[in-house]
Length: 375
Image 1: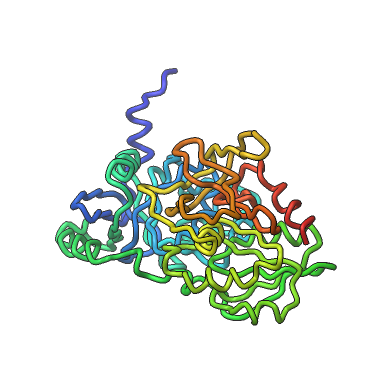
Image 2 (image 1 turned 30 degrees about the vertical axis):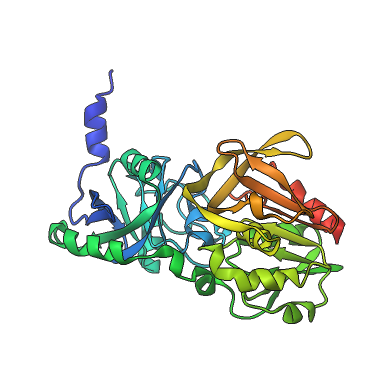
């Protein structure tokens, strides 16, 4: 018996009674119609994409995606549902979600809710059934850009295209302090251990905290705008400058506060790498379409080996401004951008990628061991 692929695909994407419709409108006027899921809402954000093949729950709950409309290049999303065990924070941070095919009936022993239900509860609109390859090609050729996504209970939203375009054009992502929106409100301790570090929360993925706890280290998470004096009051053995969303150039004051802590071991991750770069005298700049995915090759210049990394950032450090007491330790093998820096004498280092590896790969977890040895 031969499979009629055309009819099979037609059944898979057939319209259900009462199904919502949706639109994705980019600021250059490109319109993508599709089917709606999640919340019936209209949101604006910066249109980006990730090449992760797994870990949609980690992506949705990663604070670094705050203010962004995320497109998945992997086509089938939702097939293992949602579980709190897999999330990187307590809520979803994306403004909208763009996927090829939605799995309506997830199957996994840990799944508590479907992706559809969780997005409804958190007010996140989603669009599916469109050609996500076309969305990604547009972003790769034109760069990340503002966009508006809307899910409609009634109608297809055709009459709202013009209004959605105007909303997209008004968004200036680089002028919004998203770190302030996602950071913890007050200092909170996680885990117990003989050693204590302070993690400055610019938008932390909890996988970072869990990796430190596994190594017997207490982690005190403090707000993004904590002063050096407030941080030192916890008597930490080291500092972690974590990941987070937005333009690092908005956080020059935070880079100045980091500089006051240079007498302690410091480990920077993602946005933390950029802020340390600024503290070291360098400038940061925006990448055309960023690095987002779980398969980015990076060269460790000291070890002379290639590691495969998880990444989620839209900005990079310009090595030309680094002080002479600093060196570049890692570079991206795709475009040559800076993926890590270190002080030549002090126990301070940072990487642009995510060593906690959620959802993977795990090549770089040794960096946590290196930091623990320093403290």
